[in-house]
Figure 1 (spheres, rainbow, N blue to C red):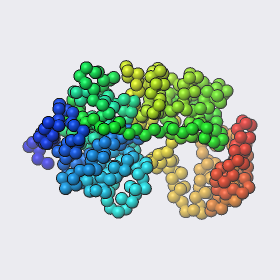
Figure 2 (tube, rainbow, N blue to C red):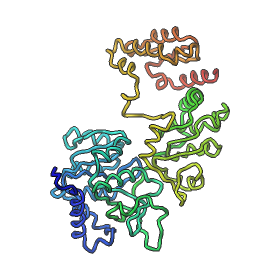
Figure 3 (spheres, rainbow, N blue to C red):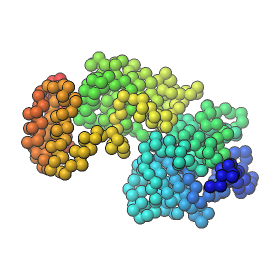
Figure 4 (cartoon, one colour):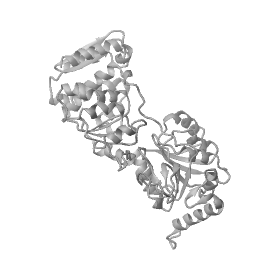
Length: 461
């Protein structure tokens, strides 16, 4: 790099903007680009090998821009390095199949996982890394800074100010990293308001945005919680009761980061009923890093919940959020202001407990457990038993009620019934329940019997 010149980013940015203005001519008014000219804009601003952030979040998708990117001429635009949190749409991988993109850094492949694996195996995609969300957002400001950001918002005004609506999600992190490092920001919006109309609020200032295009249809938003609570199983209810009494109450869990699923929904729904019966209101579950789940409404209405900061939003919850502004983070207009980067940080560092899954289990699993898992099969169970029996929780609370459930037909090496019997013998106050006709997963193989065992145990506490 020639360090006799220190404004190469600004010069390159000016060249791209000049190309775009020249190619668009009458199809560019201020910052607004005619919808049909989106391909021309992209080919004018993109250069081979660019690092490009195509906004693909857990929910909100820049789907119009994704479709336009796929349609570009690979002779003019190729070798792009895509950086985005989620691969949700087919177009997110189409750009690799047609030669427009080559390298990929991302966090979650979702519905595109199987296809991604095939393309990687075929050599069509070069993976930089698979990141946690927070790591990827942070590296936008370090070594994965986008040269061009293709984002989406609900509305824009003539000055390019953006209103992102309830699903702000990744947008601020993407735009700030790009705009303040000599990059180009292109936004698709659902509507462009006229000069007489004021945006409900300004989420992204217009001087951070270079071009705005109105998409022919509203951007796609994935509803994350559309599950029918009636489908919550008895096992999940019992697990929720055990979590509330055995973990949340035991440790005074006040600040939570809940994942999305029936297991956590059961906990949320049981707070104003089972939790209330245990006298736990005001003692647990007061502050949340969580999307606005409908399953949390009963707890909110019963006065359990003091605050919720959200990663994204939830379709159909807009009016409820506006009516409960004391609980949710909202703008003056009453609509939710989500922020995935800030909420991820809160979920990691400001919460007492997280329920969900992680791709960084090696960081969370204690060293002695990792070592046990690395043992040959014939020694692994013995090592794990030693860890359980010598754990601080067992040593500090001898005689605590413990239920051991074992499948009579377990054929996993070194997991036969004798192992369960040893565990029962060495744990004072434990009960051993052997379930006939079940192997290594009695909760799956004999669910009704398993539920009865758990119900009896929980009711005896």
